[in-house]
Amino acid sequence: MMERDDTTISPEERALLEEGREAYRRQDWQGAINAFSQALRLNPDSEAEQWLQMTRAIVEFHDKEIYNP
Image (cartoon, rainbow, N blue to C red; front, side, top):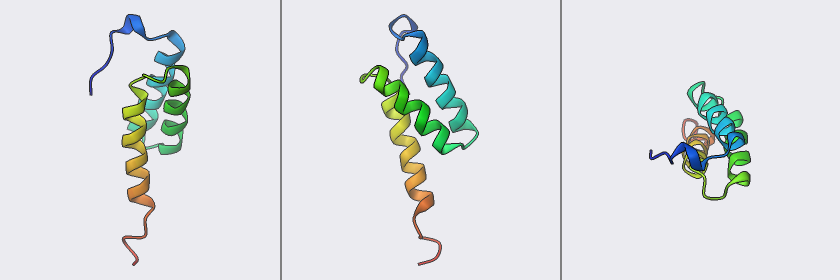
């Protein structure tokens, strides 16, 4: 995943991205979605969009009843 030059990221966005990444590592999907969504509201061009898409894909896969059809 490509990251932007840190000089183009606001401190608030940087903090939210880190919070989202940490939540993602802990598999706290809702926490990750919340943090990435907030970062995206601050900057619509944020890399948070990619993280948010990946997190949502994981949640959608886990929440489907594929194990108990």
